[in-house]
Length: 163
Image (cartoon, rainbow, N blue to C red; front, side):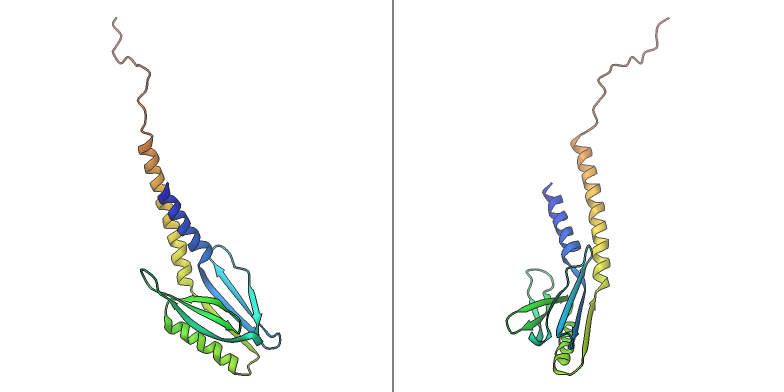
């Protein structure tokens, strides 16, 4: 039962909490940057910040105990910083940070940055289906061995009747 709970929790995090799509739209006319993120199961509420408060962007790398480190792009204001998107490689993250900084130093009226990782979408979707099938098979095997079929309690005479 504990194994199933752990797998279900990991599947929940993958489906509801892992964004595969992030979009940043900035407009000088509206003095606003809007961020939209999508996960497999739902879209997160979009949020925005004032373009005049945006000071820049930076790549942050968070080491992991095992596996690859988490590479994220953060939007930086004078008071705080906000997570925009996660990346699989530092080069792509650095290129997007350079694009954001270039927009902030230019006089362009509009800016759009889209990070679309459909590979993650399909990987998590297929992994979710595989985990679901694994759990179904596991529970069928466990239930079959936990409750073996009982022998019939009815006595049946298989001897031919004497005439």
